[in-house]
Length: 137
Image 1 (tube, one colour):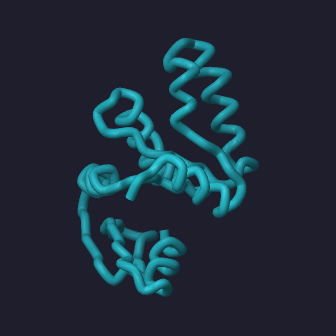
Image 2 (cartoon, one colour):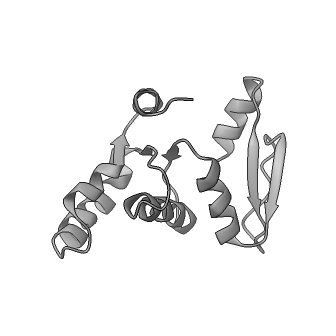
């Protein structure tokens, strides 16, 4: 998330960081000029979803997947207003997309149209175009 905060800060915009306190691997983002601290993941995710107009999801680990699937579930079940979920780097995400199609859809755990919530792209410019088409700010 540092890249998004750095870009916003360098452009003179508000750069909000939602910092989670973890024992080892997490440190505060130095580019956030507004910082909110959280002890629990669930409260941090609520804040992400509450104010989001789009998610741009970069390659990441369990935390990234957790936040992605939280938003997917809330949009799919209509608990929140739909917003673009854009995954960047098709090579990175292809295995997950293949698994969703080959397992979740095949087993009817989700419907084929649920996959329409996600868009996979390879460049920031593609992500911006998708978000501009779907979001009125």
